[in-house]
Image (cartoon, rainbow, N blue to C red):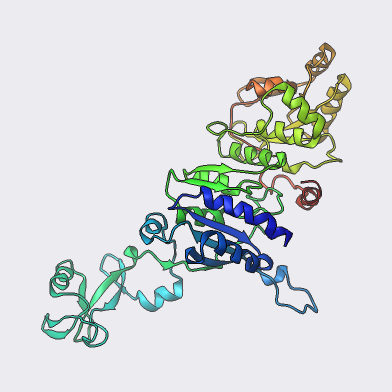
Length: 447
């Protein structure tokens, strides 16, 4: 009941700000859906309920246990509500998605081909009910029947070459080409979108992360380019990332600095480092210092996110001297990324911290190490960094192997010196093994 008390005012506010042409999707599990639906009925009106969508997010093997007394839990629920009951408004936004026909269906129905190989099926042109439904009766190509269409339309179909007799038939049929059909309309049970298991290239380590395909279906079906997508509990930012890719405007809301850092890193991977604004974050050195004093881990996540680095692969405690990683490609060997490791410090530092980072760079076989500090580094620290080897890129350019950035530098737009090439905040899973389970445990404990 405490959960409902928390959700009710939030849903009320979402109803208030939603456009009359807008749609709300609420994702929950079966333990909560039957409690949340009455709340949504009260806020949006039961007449504005559109769908209860069942998403099969996993398979039975992931939940089945020997000796279990219940069916394996394999689905989540999405509750869909319109802001207004106006069919005209809803029709302006909703775009029915379709899935391809399966091979069995094609082999059963689309059994004919034109000389050019174009595949089609034959559809009955006679009217159901023998005229009881008001269909016209007339002679067409020597056959008198009740027909689905008026004579003018039938003759138009014939002129277009869309009317055909079967070899042994006496009644004409309409040719329906496969390449003109949209496919199978997707209903309210979604079994074709996998959960996060085995989606290695998408996995960020966030415990409640959703697959991009799920958000892509929702956003594509209920919005058009330029529409606004709001995710008030955006977590690792899947809705934000997909909305950006689909050319929608977006707003993501989350109070965790960790989530904001992850979203910034995710947008960086899409090549988006500008064009959006992050509010309620430090904008000055003093504000950064206050955050570092109040929440050191939040400070770390904030500065990494500001640099476009995903902080999720790090965790509190035993980070082994690494607070962030950035991977870049250099030269024709684009299949193997190079690595920059980051260490974020909020206190007073000394050359010892620079030497420690140098050790981390060697241990991790990284190409560059970057120390991000709240305070201006001492001359001794800069001298220590200058003694490190340089990284030589494929075009023979040299880049300092150890670099120091201050918070002021980062706020002013300064970034690590590195080859101008595509970067990513996490590598392909085949190239780097990351302890996601350990990270998830930390997130659940500290987030």
